[in-house]
Image (cartoon, rainbow, N blue to C red; front, side, top):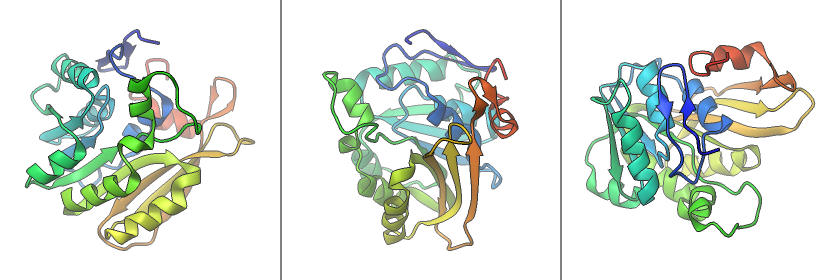
Length: 237
């Protein structure tokens, strides 16, 4: 699990990070819209830095900043940034979201986050993994309040969360003036339950575009939609 993850245009070392590269992050990085040609991007809780790296590959954003509170993950993120082709555009802050929001006067055209959440309602013996995995470290309200402050007027915020949290997350977002623009609900296979929600918010109320994404028809038989979304990244797509 700890070996470097090789993508088409970059490599991500993950041995120091509690949260390893998974489908959620890759889906979010590929699904996030860059139609507005963002100049500045913020990646909240960067971990390995994968989302920032994916957006550096996909966009012409001049400023791509990440924040990571965990010491080891922060060091790894910086290292992954430095070894990429886009190291002149990538920067990671070692800070909590709270500190960062208080200190930064800038706003961002695109904010992206793969937040920690309860995979199952239990804690493991590994406190570093728990910090990355559990929502205690970054409750949704706290995340949304900061996004409301840091997002530029025409900016978008995209996030991946468990489908079971979708309704509450949208309701909390509306309290800070963030409204759903796009929702894609993700299923592992045609017959499985919806597992994740990819959500895009903006400060403008609009019609919400809703879709569904199925990852595979059966084991390792990926759907055309999934291949189309991830083929610029995965080596074997």
